[in-house]
Image 1 (tube, helix red, strand yellow):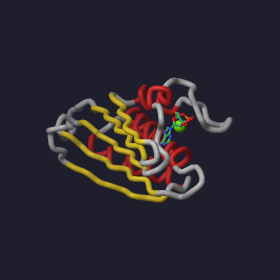
Image 2: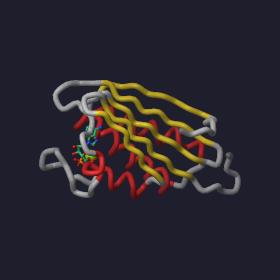
Image 3: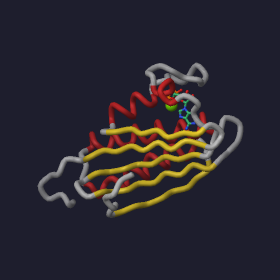
Length: 150
Ligand SMILES: Nc1ncnc2c1ncn2[C@@H]1O[C@H](COP(=O)(O)OP(=O)(O)O)[C@@H](O)[C@H]1O
Ligand SMILES: [Mg+2]
């Protein structure tokens, strides 16, 4: 658990429809804009959130439309936290799921989603309970630039 209090937060809840992946990606980038990111940094956030939300849409609810939550938080020190939560099927073996190229999906899935999140974020935490759902927590610290706010 974090003891430092976040200084800003938004929470978005949406159904696991594929159209909402682009919405979540853009919303995360819009929220992150207050950290004065570079375009590269924004691209990293968009890519990572896109992978996590796509997983909630595709894997958590394979046959139904379920609820997905995206929480965006800012912590002192220019740190962004993104929490992607679903109440879907859960992940039976998290270490296995995080292994590069591992997928339970169909052929168009690369099995690289978690690996991509890890490469673009400073940290990736996954909590999951089979039958109850999954929470993915992504964190990234942004460089402080002249003129930027904390
Ligand atoms: N939110 C989730 N709910 C249930 N299973 C998930 C979730 N996210 C990931 N997984 C499982 O982890 C595997 C690996 O995910 P990922 O690395 O993104 O690769 P891919 O999505 O291409 O399969 C998925 O194939 C799926 O079995
Ligand atoms: Mg994936």
